Length: 82
Length: 348
Image (cartoon, rainbow over all chains, first blue to last red):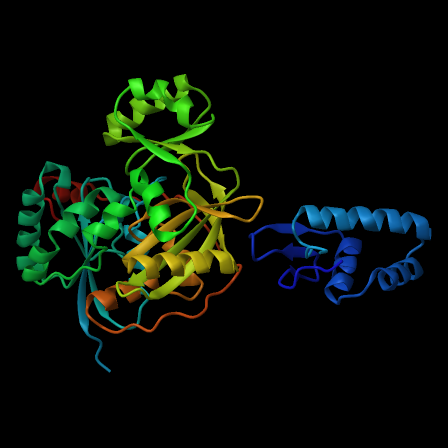
């Protein structure tokens, strides 16, 4: 679960993939998670950070988080797992 | 320090919705601090917008189309050369390049330097020759076939799955889903650009491009990859962004090194979902979006002028990633006197 090295994430939530030229806009929570991924935080660390900060049941966070990671993979923003 | 005086002649002043590269090429060289520059525009038509951009061209001469015979064009250039002492000529149309390459020795005798591909380099990268080019240089190209007559359209099914691309030898490309559409595009393209018409396998993916300059000895002087972000109905880039894509640069270096490419080049590529790169066209000239490369840190037109003048040019080793451009249209007001002068005297 690693974000590609060269993906740029700005404070405003603008994400740029310099390899494909694609760009995306994240909402503030998405940008926060992406920044944690960029810092190479693992799932447990991100889970703890987000569930402590926001009022979200842990099981629900996991579900949305995995959906989010799937979306990032679909847009080729994640390194291959293998 | 005194800058050397350089007189540069440029064609392709048709800065329309299907733009020639002339105006961006001039704009790029004008930004160079290396020369004391005079620009002579060479125009085929009286309403090429660049003619009337007085901050772009210093003078303009109308020239005959190469299709009217290279003799007339050379004669006209001799006339212009007596008056303007052109140092370097950058032709920008695919359709005129052959004439200028064939005449480069005569141009050199006149004192006009060019930096063009050789006839062999020009010929082997023709759309109709792409399969052989791919095989020779070990690069991916779509399956292509030249067709010369209507009856060949019936046989497309033997070699290709629909849809297919139908392309003119110089310009124009259409996606056709059946033989009726191929027939329609065949008629349209052959009436405009002549034969052959090229049928090309349709490769699904994202279109990406590279502008590059080869020194003729196998070295890449510069290369900038770009993705079109907004494409017009003519398939032209209306907006684009520079990419950080090692595979595209490696492919460019490989082609330039393997062909000893001399001059400007635009690679048109398709990147598939599997990240494979297919070459769909190699244009033997600087593209109209070259100013993006200049803005990203590689003034390739300036480097080309310096190579033409016989200077040694150090290859660029970087460019700004994520640099963008967007085109715009602009209504240029023209004095009737200017139009009259060009129309009647062939000079402005």
